[in-house]
Image 1 (cartoon, rainbow, N blue to C red):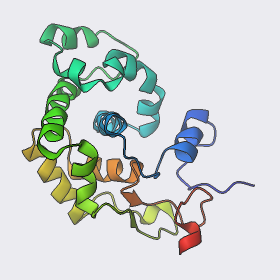
Image 2 (cartoon, rainbow, N blue to C red):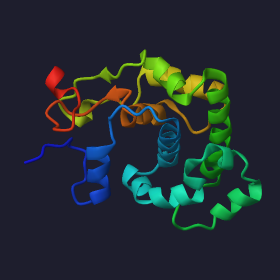
Image 3 (tube, one colour):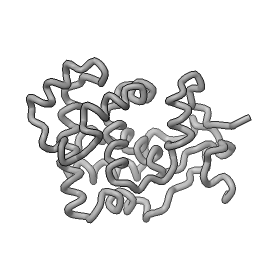
Length: 190
């Protein structure tokens, strides 16, 4: 029997697939990192399951996270999304996506890639927290507070330390898979 982290909702195939195929795997693709960061910003005040269930609709609404296209969206374009019931219709989050696309493009220009920028905070190596039970994982850390502050300085929105910590877990910068999870990439190296 496959052992997964205790937070996985087994009755939702999207949740299981997200855990098994994405969550915690070191991610180095700029566009996918940008998408994941946006997804985490949408989650603020909501459940991850809600966001995951709306993921495809978000992709369609935001040009499959083509940052150039998002950065050029007009206020009218963004306001039209407020009528789309398939996504989270929070005006501040929708407008933050455009601001984040603009900030993301500026970071890529300044640092060469978003990957290099974000992974530099962990010296380009995943931090393994050795979690026995998912409830032991922190909601935020001094590191996520520092990354949050740095992202905000670059112009990103909705990137508080809790959001940033979740993003870092999801993108594999931090390994918070439970120690006995079959999908823990560090399981055999402990």
